[in-house]
Image (cartoon, rainbow, N blue to C red; front, side, top):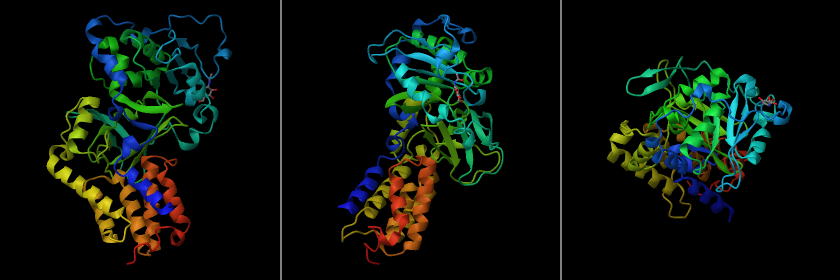
Length: 423
Ligand SMILES: *[C@@H]1O[C@H](CO)[C@@H](O)[C@H](O)[C@H]1NC(C)=O
C-alpha cells in the first residue's frame, strides 16, 4: 500500500543518516577504505628516500610523438600503470590543466572511467561550472592558524542561513585500489600533482597530512583530506584544496554535498555565523552514538574528539535516544500512535538544541507529515518546504526523499497523510 511504502522509505532513511545514506559522497572516515590501510601500514619504514621530489615529478615516459590533439579531454599524455589484476585494467594519470579556466584537474583512474569523467557536464558544458559560480571565491571566508587545530576556515563577514560558503572542484581524484606498492602509487600521484597548474599544485601541497613522511607526502595529503566520490559505480578519492580547510565540529554550522556531474563540492551555512567565527562541517554523522563517532574520527582523521557532544557522552547519547524514540513515534501510523504535532515541534527543538541545524530534513519532514495528518495543510506546506531546503544543502536535489515533499506540496489535501490522524 502506497502510504506505508512512503513511510517505510522515511523510516529507512531515519537511522542511516548522512554519510551512509548519501549515495555519492562521504568523508573517508565513514567508509574507512582499503587504500588507507594498504597505503600506510606496510610502507613507511622501508621508504627513506624521496622517490621523486614533488616539483620534479616529470613523467618518465615521454610523449611518444603523439600530438596533443590525440589526448582527447586531456592536456597531457596519459601515463599508465601495467594492468592491475584487481581491476582488470590499467590506471592512468589524466590531467586537464586548462579545466575550469585554468584551475586544472588530475584524475588517476581507468581509461574507461576517464571517458566517463570527460563526458560529465563539468567537462562538456562550458557554462556548467561558471553558471553556478563554481571555483569562484565567495568572499565569505578566509583561512588562518587556529590554536591546536592547524589551519581552519573563518567567516570574513556575518553569514546567514543558506549562504554559500564554498563550491570547488577537486585538484586530484584517484581510483581506490590496494594493489600498487606505496612507492608506485606515490610516483603516479606525484605526476598527477606535478601536472597541475602552479597555483593548484601549491594549494594542494600546503594541505595538512597525517604521517609526515616526505617520501609519501602526496598520498599522505590524500589520506588527511579525502572525500569519497563515486563515479561510474567506482569509489574514487577526491581532494578539494579550499574545502579541506573546513575543520570538524560535532555541532557544525555548515553542511556539504557533492554534485557528481559537476564534480563540485558545495558548502552552505546552516545557522548564522558571525564574522571571524570558524566555519565547520561534520566529518561523521552527528546522529551516531558517541563511541562510534569518536572511533570514526580517530580511525579516519587521527584526532581525539573533545567537543561537547563527544566529551559529554552520556548526555548526548540520551538525547540521541530521545530523538530516535520521537522519530519512531512520529513514524507510527497505526491507531495507537502517540504522534502529535507537539511531538514534531519538540523533535525540531531537540535537533536545534543539539546544534544539528545541518540535519533538519528529518524533523522538518516529520513535522510536515504530522501537521498534514491533523488537517493543517498550511503548516504541512511550510515544513515540507523547509525539509526540501535542508535536503538541498545536505544531499542534493536527486535524493529520493526529495520526491516525498514534491508530492506533498503538489496538494497537501490530496496527499496520503492528509487527515490520517484525526485531531
Ligand atoms: C579541459 O576542460 C575544459 C573544461 O573546463 C574543456 O573545455 C576542454 O575541452 C578540456 N580539454 C582540453 C584538452 O583542454
